[in-house]
Image 1: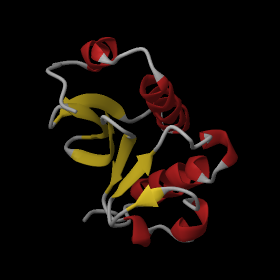
Image 2 (image 1 turned 90 degrees about the horizontal axis):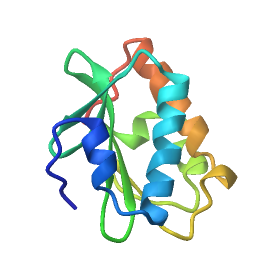
Image 3 (image 1 turned 180 degrees about the vertical axis):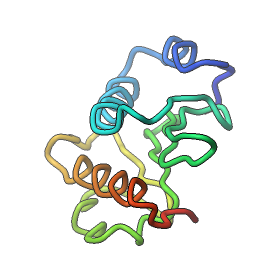
Image 4 (image 1 turned 135 degrees about the vertical axis):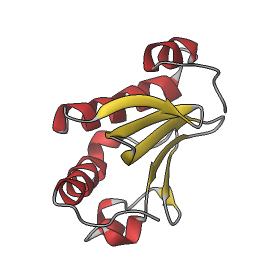
Length: 125
């Protein structure tokens, strides 16, 4: 879904109060807690996290899932194991209603991706 928001606060206020908002807020907190240096901005009508046009993640609530976008998932070591149970593609992790985020390796995946970004490794598409 696309949200006509100019700031992250506006974006969050536009989200419906349902499971998607809950999951999006959980993922958002994982990112911001581990990497407080990342700026949260709106790009392409979704939340983006990075510094100076060097973005690590994008996050968006879709109709049937929450999308976490990362450059190329396969560049992260052990991504297949960490993301077991998720439907994902080259650069998009789909978080569905049935997923219990805390019971998965998503937090470790986010940390590994941020660590790679901090070290200057290429995580882009």
